Image (cartoon, rainbow, N blue to C red):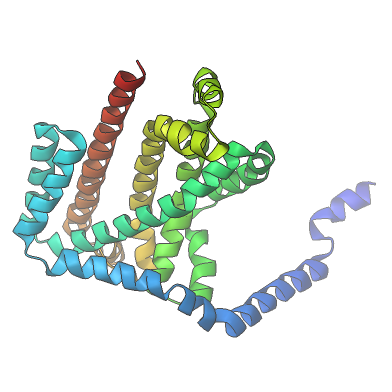
Length: 296
């Protein structure tokens, strides 16, 4: 027994090495065989990302500033938030970071749309089936504890370096809060409300889309908020595989010890995070108050 314990860390090294080699070769073979098909599958995503980036970078900055201020007002109905948004964007423009900021905003916008399209249906599925919840929850746990750099490995091997691989890595990293909070929001809907809907003869889909989803919207908005924050946190790491925006100057500053370049672009990322956070939170609070008035 003592000998076995002494040999344990060194046991089956050849077997483990062989297993790793088989997995690596299998993945390489898969990427060679299906890499082009996978790339073609994601081409609409590339078109969407490039289109949104061109719109934000080619449109004159006063128009973009007014557009963002208008969105902030419609979402929050709070002049302080609008003034803060305009002030942060003007500072970003003054320090010559406008173009990189718009590239980052376009990336976050596309990531958020994709996370909503993928995350909400999975969250609904989890809320409607405890079995699915028990299957998906461990996967989400792994996704949230996996080091962020690890997400870059499979997408780079499949799709190479560029915008789309970075986008996919960011979405996968930022997706779990969207799924979890959609599931939680639907599950937290008051049972008395659901019984009332059943009493009025609502079908399962009517109950979901006319009762559960509207009441879960504030929680879903919190999920969107968290998704945006996690996507922004991944921006610098994604710049390592060619994602343009504020992350690349930060990466350059780290490599060349440019203190001011790193600080200014880092603060610009913080500024964008503050804008997204305050606007989405304010919108969530407005939804909550509206639902309290309607159902109060």
